[in-house]
Length: 121
Image (cartoon, rainbow, N blue to C red; front, side, top):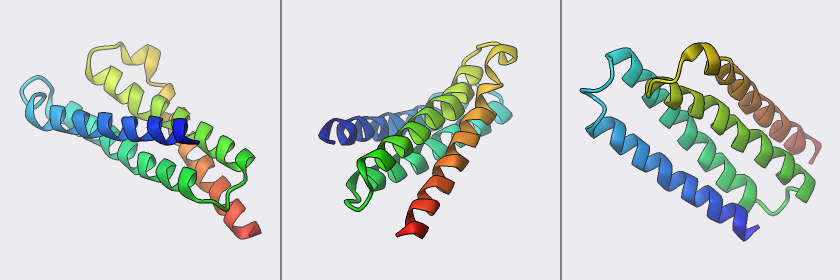
């Protein structure tokens, strides 16, 4: 569990650094639309880092529920935010853009799974 919380904390630090990088260094390098997309990636990443901290600190989740929720949100961050960052930095959207909606769907599934777990309790 400490490894997961350490990884989530590190991911939170990366999120803050990416946000600062976007606010201070990317304004001249990216178009307004690209910068807005980048900010969306950062915002969704931070939302889900906070959710991961909650999931891994909440003692009433079973280990299997934590594992499933961690998977959904970690991979969701990687696919959703990661694909947005990659596109902003020049990766051809044709190859990476399909990952964005998959990541978004993983976020939705994570939230639904967490809701189901709470409902059953």
